[in-house]
Image (cartoon, rainbow, N blue to C red):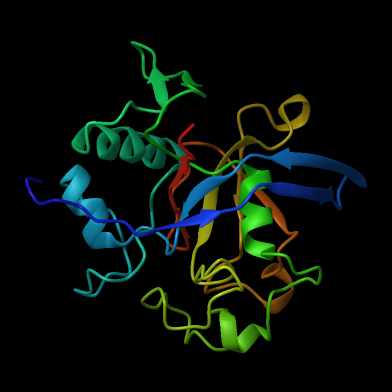
Length: 226
């Protein structure tokens, strides 16, 4: 845990994105300030360096695979720990019971991307369901041999981000639909076990913030300075 953890971040320009929910037929537009997003999902090695834990169930001794079997809450705590490691202000405030997590919007520390940030960065100025041919950009059920792969092996999107689709689903900050699903949080991107129709920029999935499974991981974000 004394090892310095390096995570590559890609600068994302300001802009606007329109999100849609097929279940409710709702659309909404979000204006976004510039931010930074992990070029790759967090790996097992990075997660172990920060937390001292190796939760992944598909590792097979490969520290360079994306971390998985991590909950939304695990991802939030990782962000805070990495922020403290780099002497940055943690993005989240967890109450004494560990039950309530509050976003601190003015911090300079690591955090989960919002759902709007995630889709905007995934699209990278493109307008179709994907930023390239699926087999070229993503590990999915049709080409993954039903296992995760080292991030970065597929082609990046136009902004240089790898594995935004496929490989592992990624936790976002947002509540999915609190009136219907309570504390359930948003997952994006599709995973190595998903059919091609789940690996699209607009697809939304939800799960309880303590849920862990072997095709769900995350990548980190930071707000831009100033």
